[in-house]
Amino acid sequence: MKRIPHFILPALLCSVSSFAYGEAVTNKTEEPSAIEQITVETSPTANKLPVGTFDSPISNLEYDPRVDLQSRNMAEAQADVTIRGGIFENTGFRVGSATLLDPQSGHYFAEIPIAPQMLTSPAILTGADNALYGMNSSVGTVSFGWKPIITGGSVSFGTGTNDFNLQSIHGAKSTKLDSLNNYTLGFEGEYSHSQSDGTIDFGDHDFTRTAGRVQLLGSQSQTDLFFGAQDKFFGWPNLYTPFGVNETEDLETRLWMLNHKQNYAQDSNFEVSAYYRKHNDHYIYSRENPSAFEAFHKSEVKSLGLSGRHAQSDVFAVNYSAQFIDDSIESTTLENNFTSRNYYKVSVLPEYKMALEGNKQLTFRLGAAFDDTNRDDSELSLIGDVTLNTQNSKGFDRTFYLSYAQASQVAGYTAIGGSDSGGLFRSNYNLERETTKNLELGLLMEEQSWQLNSAIFYRKDHNLTDWTFNFDSSSARFANPVDINTTGIEFLATKHFDTAKLIASYTYLHKSENYGAADIDASFYALNFPDHRLTLGAVWNPTDILEFRVDNEWRTQHENALRNGDNNALFTQLTLKITPPILKNLFITFAADNLWDESFEEIPGTPGRGEQYTLSATYSW
Image 1 (cartoon, rainbow, N blue to C red):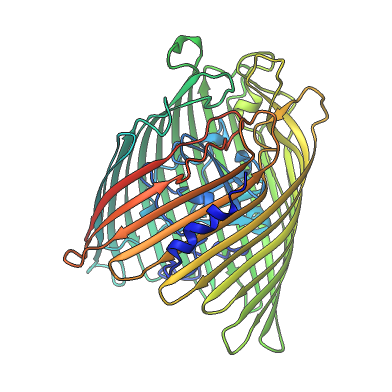
Image 2: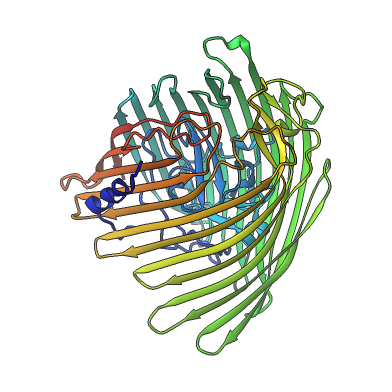
């Protein structure tokens, strides 16, 4: 079925916009050199807010060209965030200098009870940057920083189809301290709640998040103390199994975090992050018959992370990162006493800059990372890249880079600590440390009104832990190691006009795999990827009163024996924002998600989401 004409039509109707706030998502990410630095750059998506619930740190990542967000129910319910054709456990979520880990399964990495208003826009770290800053995430890291608190706030109410309702309030206050020169004390809090019957039968949800922080901000430092609590109930047919049952999950997440960032000398800084995370999960296989199978998991994680950059001179600097994680779990499904682990990582990446003629600069980085745990073999990984940057008097900026990066990680407890002979989810006690080697060549070009990011990469994954299916077995999933070679191409382009902005991307992925076993009929994750994927986003401000936003994604998914329906899919999210001239602090939003009622199974065997329409009003101060 050909749907490309439908993909283009919404963009032609809604055009584009110059609205683009947030951190750039590029292949090169450096630690900021000033605490109060504000960067106005390009966002890879047009929409910032989801349609079916309140926003979370992962909202709308599905339209980023390097991120494939495979959701159950919706992204904010249970989302597997994959980067560059990896799987959900290859992706880390970093806040400050610390990666938020869940010991049970990567399915819960994205359970982050932090209000997005408190965080910078996500930066996608890949290649050398992921190897330097990531922790137990061998392919990519979604990285956030803490924003300075600014006095203000907002309150929102929403309603919509499928008995949807939403309430949210956010407030912040920043005050200069007379007793401490150049310091301000800030307080920020947020509460959000949403619920609905779901876009398909048995797809209901009920979410609540409460978050607050205290911040001491100076001219060269920022300290944040945060607490967040999130409670989520949601259901979905075939949530994790392909057996035609209505499954549910009830999640409780608590996060305490202390973060300090300090600038010193010239172009030097460090950041220290410490957190305690507690996560409870109650899974029910069949809501009609809960006693058939249910599981309880209680996990705790303590972590301390450090990262920074020390500049010896204008030409030489050392980038570094280190993290320690201690975790433990109580579970009704783990059987082999694999219920605790300590993780260690140290990475050092020296940097040398060389000025060339014609406003050119050549940068070399070469270093290594060391990973270890108290249960697994250690691994030493090489990291390096070469970057050539050219600027001219007309504002044209061009950057070439070539990078080689190795990274490694270990499997979660569900994959290695449960039963290896039966049950719904069958573990594998022979899983070894996973290793990844990534070779990448990229070109970034930028002028005042447009930007192009492009890359070609080749990645070798060894002993990658995948979840597979056998049609002759009663188990829903098997943890199996696989060696996969992945080739990928990425393009992301943005163009600014007077009242509009256009965002377009294309990605291509090709994989060759070797499981070393013949009894595997389908892969839920490692071989669930798009061969071709296009995104087209647009924002248009025809007047001060109206703003249109549209994101489109079209894909051709790789063939999978478990998938029902078409391998081609088109998703569209459309938003109309109205700001009445009489009340400029009030705006009304009409939004639609899955505008064409696409039934594509993002995860093979799991039904896709349906249409959702909402109407909301927000008053800000």
